[in-house]
Image (cartoon, rainbow, N blue to C red):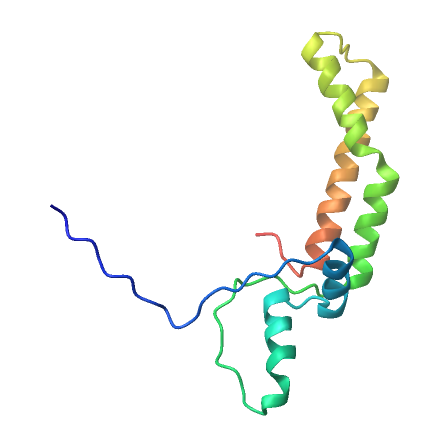
Length: 130
């Protein structure tokens, strides 16, 4: 018979709470870019005057430039890229995609749109190409 390890606690335990979609949205709005758990913990214990023990959290990239990120979202909305690429993929899969000047131009435009979005995202996230 294999011995089972005894149940041990890590010193912290998760706590779950049910929220309506409206309550969740209000909480996310108040938390801003802060993780919900960290925001709730800070608000809950803010009046105790003690610093909370540091928590290990997943590292999220900091958004360095909100304007650049908004520009990326605008480019995505204006490009109709998803629909165009889907149409091209469907035509290619069915064998009905002749390489006409129009098709070449559409592929070139889609490629340029993707390159522009990549550059804007990398700038917004402060990522440099290797």
